Length: 477
Ligand SMILES: Cc1ncc(COP(=O)(O)O)c(C=O)c1O
Image 1 (cartoon, helix red, strand yellow):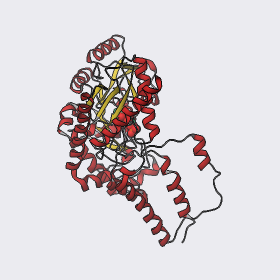
Image 2 (cartoon, rainbow, N blue to C red):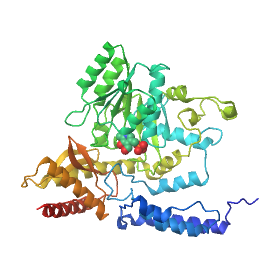
Image 3 (cartoon, helix red, strand yellow):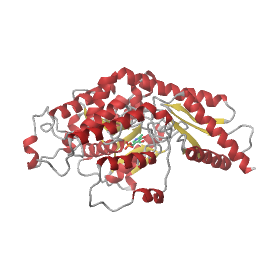
Image 4 (cartoon, rainbow, N blue to C red):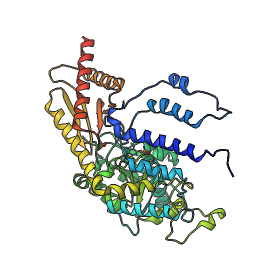
């Protein structure tokens, strides 16, 4: 029977080929595209705001409208000159794999519905467990929509395993550089403000161990229950890594759950340097990594790994009568038992296909290249008398500001100047280089995890910045 949604085979083919051509053009010519866009709500409303149409339209007309109006009004997160936030470099194989997963609407919740989808999640999870030196037999994990959901899933698990139903005295610790998704997760879980300890970081933006020890001791004296520490393995601001081994020692001594948020930085373990810097990551009870960041995957794929897979099933497994027919045997994992979602898209497919196609070696060399690139940018900046490094290249992030030594500018003037430089770069639409605040100073933050970004791209962007700086200073005089 034909449904109301069916197109003819010829229509589907021409529609699909047009989309594939568009995507291929994007991958093949991204350097020539304009990475940045900006539009106000009014401007976007003027283009898009309509009532839901009662009547149909020709498929290609809607497609053309979308390609002409939607895409140009979205920033290109894969562009080599996207330096801000954590860019999304992606890769073509995974993009195509995602279209298979969505095209066939494969359900990745229960074993019986899609055994191969569950198997690929088990297989790719084993790859990740091995990469991070987690126990492959006992350990486990799950793909999530991203790092935020992985952190939330970790904290739900930590609380269930360490506190059971009574968490009224539970205390959770993290540094002032931990990602905001952790605080969000803590709030979602219903912890009160008094149950959260946000600890200061040292000059390198790493957790200060002595402060942690003092806080735990104080809380024990008050009869409270220190139950979880969230470390960062690659903070979003600077890429700094908390002292993982020292924190692991404390967590073991104190019977505290050790969660590591390695959403952005974890992937660096595939490089020699990253492996050294991330020493101790294998001692976590739970670890967030985020393949849609530095594993070059398209959105949305995050991941949570745990030392003991039964922690996840003990936390999330529910056995409603309407799912009893799809319960397999114990080895046949139903991923809806490992996390929050029941219906889940087939995220493992893109991870599987891209690793199978490119091999880990290509990922290792891309990550090694990105780390080296950040170090080379640091060298360029250090050679110039115009730039000041605020935090050195760490796991492909570097923070700096325009601060010519021959100009006598106050901190306030430097803040305004660097904020303006960032704004003008954005307005030029040639690159995205936004600011963050470190030690109270406005700084330009560059996150260099795109394997297509060349040192020439960075040089051009720095030149753009210095030209704008000259312009701004001239205007002020
Ligand atoms: C360290 C860290 N943790 C968690 C997240 C949140 O991840 P997502 O945006 O995938 O939810 C980010 C995002 O940048 C991050 O850098």
